[in-house]
Structures are given as C-alpha cells and as structure tokens.
Length: 150
Image (cartoon, rainbow, N blue to C red; front, side):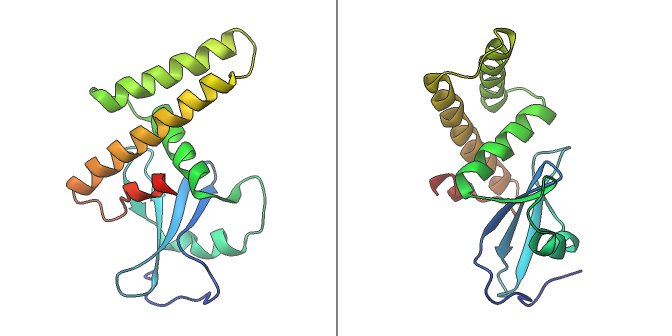
C-alpha cells in the first residue's frame, strides 16, 4: 500500500516508534504523503512498510507498539543493530565496545553508572550517524543521519 496522501492531517512528522521491538519511523514522502520505514533485522537498513501505518497510529500505547522521542529512537536503532548485526570495521568495533560495557554491568549485577550510560549513549549516537551515512551512500531512501541531532 502506497501512502500518497496524509490520512491523519494533524500528525506531526517525523514520528518515531518501536513496533514489536523493531524501530520504525513515519516520515513525509517527497510527494507530500507519508512513508513508514522499519529497520531491517538482516541488514540494519530501512525497509518500507506502509502497511503498518495504521497500527502505529491507532494501536494505542502498549508494550508492543510505542511512540518514542527522536533521541530514544537513535538509541533503540543502534541497540537493535548491535544485537542483530555482525561484521567488520569501525561501526562493529564500537558495537562491541558498547556490548562489553553493558555485559560488564550485567555480570556485576548492577545498572550502568552515569558515566557508562553517557558513554554508551554517545557511542550509539556516533554509530547511528556512521551507519546512516553509509546507508545513504548505498542509496537507501530511508536513511537519515540528521535524526541524531534531535
């Protein structure tokens, strides 16, 4: 289903969500309509999924579908990518750094310290921009590194 019109004129775009643990975003299309992008578990890129639009908008607040602010969206995307993707290079080295910090806290049965939390958040903002810029270079129409500036 292609959304070439905005069925919810009061909707402020972009809009960020968790859809069954997978980050999704609703953005304005070049034609003035709306598009839904959901992060791919296989590639970390963006897969168009307009068919989930009404569920995102009208399912109500719940555990499986939640609207989130941009800063949390960036964190959730990178946590998702870090959990499901593997590879070589600087982005994956940073994912491993985050994993080591989180794993150490879990082994010690404690929450992250303020410093650790800030470090993890900063690394994830950086990897988000790096990953999104890479996706843009590869022609992914859903990529947008500027979300990290929000």
